[in-house]
Length: 286
Image (cartoon, rainbow, N blue to C red; front, side, top):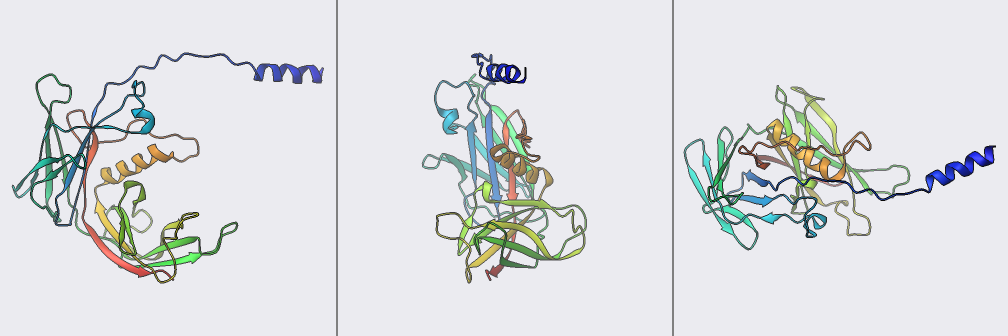
């Protein structure tokens, strides 16, 4: 009887049948993304279109979004300074005609006019980002640590020291290693001050990073590492968190990515308009 039951389960497990899923594709939506910085430079805004899952091309599989080239994009500071932009065909983004450096205490408005649905009438999309007062750690240490099943000096602990200002704060951290800024969004580090709000902190473990496998090491004894810290608005930090979750999955395990990533763009577009005003500290890897 047990043998018959086992064979029956095996037979059930081996049965397959094709299933056609009726997937309704969402209409393409405009995606707007721009991050202003405290570097005196031409700031950039990128406009793209979402790619439907049922798109007939391989754009979805390749993760390629269509760049939007025809639009009016303008940035205005709370002081009233207007920064028009122009389209850069080489890099598929809009950039300010004049250099722009953001300052704490100011806010910046984004205004986009674009006939995205091609009905002959441009739609309007807006967003505002506010530059918060600078805040961040006073010093940094980078030390190798040993862990079971890992090669020596493959894992590095980044510890920060300082005093946090009162009130809830959200931070985005970026690393410059040996003079090269790691500035892709998926290389950023984010977090809040929930563990040390308004208090001094010492040897606080910000992050642990490993050297890439089968590549030249990023971290090694004597290399200089700079930590750029930006005190940002909560929604911007959570937007970055959700973008990372969409790409790499969330916790708990098998929880899946969020269905809708938040946005601060009005008018029905996706994306975000934020800023990074940074303080900077350095350390030599031990």
